[in-house]
Every structure is written in structure tokens, then in C-alpha cells.
Amino acid sequence: MAEGLPRRVFAGWRGLGLFWVLVLLLMGGAALWLDRLVPPEPLETVAEAPQAPEALAQSPAAEEPPATVAAPVAETPAPPAATPDPTSAPSSAQVVVPAPVVVEPPPPPADEASAQTPAAPAPPPLDVPVVAPDFPAARPIPAPDPALLEQGRFGALPRVGTDGRTSIRAYAGQFDRQDTRPRVGIIVADLGISNAQTEDAIRRLPPSVTFAISPYAPRAAQVAERLRAKGAETLIGLPLEPAGYPLNDPGNRALLTGRSAPENLANLEWVLSRFPGYVGTIGVVGGMRGERFAAMEQSYLALQESLRNRGLLFVDARPGVAGPARAWGRSVDVILDEPATRSEIERRLGELEAIAKARGSALGLAHAATPVVVDRLVAWAAGLERRGVVLAPVTVLIRRPPEPSETRPQ
Image: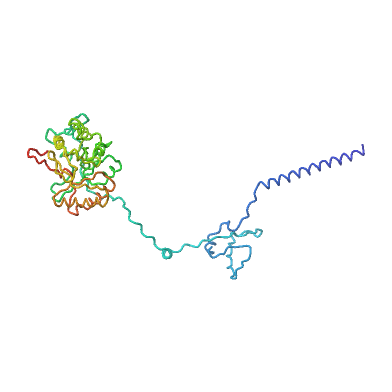
């Protein structure tokens, strides 16, 4: 018993020592494993530390060469480094290596830069839309008068009032008839087909221009209402059989030489009932001017009589022909947009002015309110009065029928 006790004590201490050795080995291995998981933090440098504004102002970066560990090999000695600010210097126990600083040269002065770089050539002028000048405003056209309407098979149709009033006078645009200067009228046709072109024409063209709304326009009544508010006269386009028909097709509501008189009368009533409040019609739709229908003299005269009996004027879209023989109206003198190029439109506007000065009045027709047509008309109309000519609505330019039996509308 006495001899076995020291052996047991020694064995117990040895086991305890082995236990702590194993614990220390495990802790050391764990520390090494954690050290590999976490990347070492980078050393701080002087370049990363914020510098005081005073130090930057006293030591320009352009005069300091980049600091390196090795001595410079150039024969010219490097300029001394600026004394660091003691308020931002690191402690003596810290070894700090400044990072190289890349400095871009300052931009040259404006005068020097312009002397080194030649001036860029001016860009070519752009053909931008002409800004509409402030044309004089006109009084709005009166709203459609129920006394000048009657119900037809397709809607309301114009008629002469019981007191003799007609649409020609009721919906005429504003104009000083005492003005003795030569008068020029402009009709812009096919309004309402293109929304963008219609909006541009209504917004920019002067109110003395007359607008012909297409019978096939999806919102003809709304377009007419806007033009009345502008103070502009309106016509409705009348589709008549043109030259080259049926290749040139004026639409399913056209008056054709191969249709009977009742069929043509029905189509005429359909066209006239598209919207109220216009002064008359013009024989043009889609650039087609009804040459073949006009060649049928009896049918053409019957059409004119129907329009006169309803108190409407008629504009013949064929340039150079005699005016209507049975209706109030006249023919067009110049087509402005055939072809629709800037130079040709300007040339024909000048021709129109010359005719007005020679004869007292002239009437021009543009087939559509394309951007080039609107631009040229705006620029032309802005200087028209300085050239001694006045722009007039179409009701000022019409003529009475040559027959002595016809009476003037009231």
C-alpha cells in the first residue's frame, strides 16, 4: 500500500499534464486556422492620411517629385521634400512610406488653348421651321346658324335663309373692304387628314388664309370648330372625277361621269353634310382637281346651280380656266406646290403677287399643309404688306355669275 501510493500520484500528474498539452495544441491550431481566414490589414501611408489645407497651399503638388525607397540616380539632385505638418505627422514608432502621387499638369489658359487649337468651322445653316410671327388676330367666325340649315338624308345641309342670308356672308372672315391694295388669297386643302399637319397649319398660318377640309377627314367637325375660333374661313373639298381615273381615285363618295345624276346628287349631299358653318366648296381632294367631271358641261353646270341654291360659293381648282358660270366663286390662278419644293413654292408665290398687282387680285392653292408649304407661307406672309399686297380670305375674291338673271346673295 505504501509503495503503490506514490506511483498512483505520479500517474495522475502525468495524465493531467498530457491533458493540458493537448488543450494547448488544439488552441494553437485553432488560432492558425483563424489567422488564415482573416486577411491582414494594409499598412497606412502618408498619402492616405488627410492633409491640412495649409500644407497643400504651402507645398504645391506639382513641385514635389514622387518619393521612392531607393536613392535617385539622376545627376541633378532632387529638390528637398516639404516639411510635414507636425499636427499630422505619425509617431516615431511608426515606419511610414509615402505613396507615389501622380499629378496632371494644369489646363492652359483660355487664350493659350485657343492659340494652340484652331477654331472649328461654323456648322452649315439648318433648314429649321420658320417661327410664326404675331399675325393680327381676327374675330371668331360665328357658330353655325340653325336658320341656315335643313335636315337631309345624311345630316344637316346648308340652305338659304328665309331672309335671304347665305353661308357666304354668315361665315365670312374679317377683312377691311375699303383696303385698295392688291389682294392675294391662299387656300390650303386637305386639312384634317394628317393630325400633325393640321395642328401645325392652324397654329402657325394667319387667319386670312382659307382652309379646305377634306370630306374624308375623320374629325372634320372638330377641325372646323377650331378654324372658326381662329377666325379663318373654311371650305369643304369636293371629290370630282379627275384625269387618269380610275388610277387616280378620288374616293367612294366622288362625283363620277359614269354615275347617274341621282347617285351623284346623293354623294354631293353626303359631302355637304360632313360639318356645318363653311362658306362653300372647292373641287379638289388629295391633289386631284376633277378635270374629267368638269369636261361634262351639263353635269358641271348642274353642280354649280345646286351649290348656288344652297347659298354656297364654288372654287374651280383648275388654274387658268374661266370662273364658275352658275355659282358665286372663281378659279385658282396658281398651284403653289407642284412640285412641293422650297424654291418652287417661293417662285410661285412671287408669281401670285405679280398677278395680283396686274389684275387687282389672285388666288393660290396648296394641295396639302405639308411642313415645307407651311414654312414658306409663314415666311412669305410675314413681309407681304411691306410689298404693297394684302392677304384676303376667299369670300373677298369671288365673282358673281356672268348671267344677268342671277341675284347677288345677301
